[in-house]
Image 1 (cartoon, helix red, strand yellow):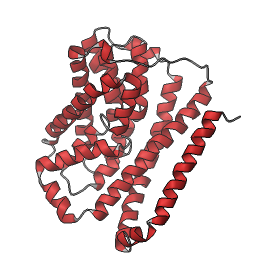
Image 2 (cartoon, rainbow, N blue to C red):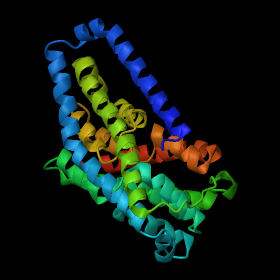
Image 3 (cartoon, helix red, strand yellow):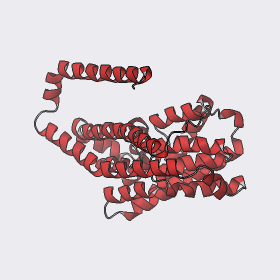
Image 4 (cartoon, one colour):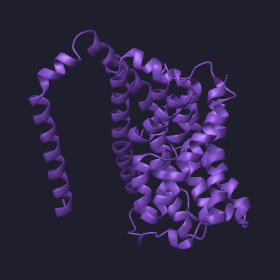
Length: 322
């Protein structure tokens, strides 16, 4: 039986799809002229290549993330972390290695850790580290940057450093009243049903952002003149800031962002490393999820500082890539 809310959501989705189709039909002639011929072929090639390389890692990561979220007891984290908060922060950051999922899953897990007595600083370190240093993300980065193991190492080290620094900073200046967790309840849903529900939700949610990111990368390659890209990419500061902001706006899943970064070849390795460090720690979807899970007072303090820390640390590690 489909509930009223489900029916309304389905109807709303159909209305959005219909509106998009009407808009596409209305502007089909200008669009066809804009991306016709060689441009359309280039756009399609870049778009498809990014998706083909990224989707297997996205699907594998979503499945493993759902397994851990559903079948690993949440009390496990509180038992294995050190009792001293300052030591719990790096331990929680390293624990992110065993969560092969994206940032979409780390936010609610961090909230559940805080509810079960884990110090918020450690939970936040886990939140930032899990989507940045897990094996799926690092394997995808190695595939996207073949023959460049230093890129994989720099991404892992920079992501962990950002997570630990932000955890220690919260431990020093954070206030309990800045975090307001929503009330939850256990509805007793069977584990396998919860597993498939988590998979469906994450693959649709993260996959949508991946498609947008791939389309944006292809559009940049086609519509932005090479002279503009070369001029922007050739400026050390502007190139880094441009890709840092782009990472926030595109909101690509961390299991797929390396392929988008690899396609932005005019930019330096440092700028692309900053793109990979910023994306898993602060982007539009993370900002929205953090506001929903931890409250707006938390988000307006945590997100901007995380952005600055990710850019600075990414530039620092990028300096040793060449």
